[in-house]
Length: 259
Image (cartoon, rainbow, N blue to C red; front, side, top):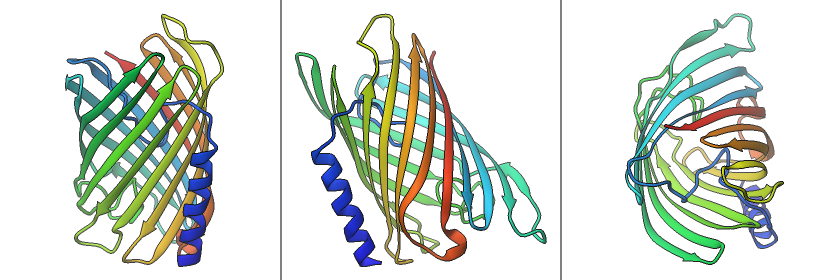
């Protein structure tokens, strides 16, 4: 497992040094914030296929920016769970509700480019079914603290996120690193009318369970005015997990509208 974890870190480091893309990412987060008093309504539904089940998590997310450097949000997911084993019943209902907080503590703007740093906390409440599905429905309280760093220019951008997710009543404590790149396919315009490609990686080390997962997501985004549409497919590159928990793929479908 340690060898796979080290290999994953080396892969991500190499990619970071050779990236030439732009974004906000689809499956990760971004440090770029909108103006004060802005409200956003969004969703990013995931269909996840593993060796033991197919699960859909469809959250409704509401974000509000009290100031241009702060954000609070609530995520309320609906979950549909279909086990592979015929003797197990399908389930559907409320997933784990999450409360989000972000604060931008560093910003450096230059001509045509910007660098931002954001502190982030995500408190996940045990409102969902006890499915043991990370990021969708565990039925256990979780507390995530992280730092999001991002550089964006007219031509390219890189987004990084490093954090730790604590699960006091389980063994799924997770050291998580995300790396996202995006490539704009059109020249910047106003009002916004843009198509972007995204190349995103996630490294998850479950420190107590001694499991490791490295994921890659390929995505595309269309942004028109206040509306954004996202589509991405995610696949495991490396995984040291129990066989029944091994992931096959995920498909993400998202929408965001600025109110």
